[in-house]
Amino acid sequence: MKRILLMTDFSETARHAAFYALEMFQDSKVHFFLLNAYDVEFSGSPYLMQVKEEMSEESTKGLKRELAALHAQFPNARIELASRYGPLVDVLIKEYHEDGICPDLIVLGCRGESALENFLLGSNAYDVIKNVHKPMLAVPKSTLYKKPRRMVFATDLKSIDKEIARPLYELLTHFDSELLFANVLEDEYINRLEAEEKIASYFPGIKLSFHFLDGVDVCESVCNFAGDNEADMVVLVRHNYSFLERLFHPSITKKMVLHPQFPLLILHEEEK
Image (cartoon, rainbow, N blue to C red):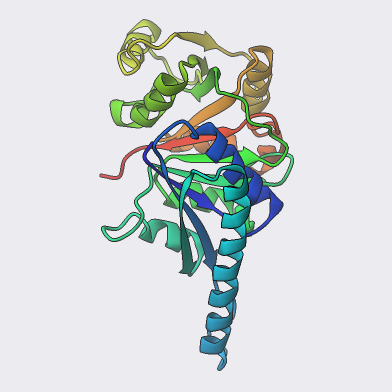
């Protein structure tokens, strides 16, 4: 991880997520970007330009305040400010264009009982995950930083390839973490041994194990497994759409894999 984007709406939740990331990577050579996205709700207003200018000023002022707070605890962190106009999803997508920030990881704060119930800036979590196909780390407000010694990867054993595994492998190697695969979908036949050998080849030198979970409720099963195994982080991959949609269906959002004590690392299939 060389470039990390910290999203902020100037809330305590967002600041907590930024502190979490700064502590997590304080021993790494990382270039942080603190980004605030602002938008005008009524674009047809005759005072649009005036409102945009005022919001731009407030965004810049807010970013400077946040920078001072972050540097008070992490004075040596390299943090660059970025104020952007537009809807959050559009802003994030643009940052991956040639002249954008192009971060290796996006860090977001989350407020509610589940990390994806109340996403940063009030955005719809599923829309952000669906449209921004890059690694994200969602940090619950109540989570205190703890070195990720053990991570649980909720998977169907089919949604992982070398490119998806790469950012996770970097984290596992950096923190000398153990990886526990939790297979939660068994609707279709899969050659387990073959799948496990293939996946293991993506994580050379990493201590890993494979587990098959019982239970009708996917989220509850993974939550219980992560808790029982004292996991420090839960990992998901957005690749198999039916798998993700089962996890993020509105009826089970409050029972999301991410309990307040579990940060959630979301990986994505690379765009073709």
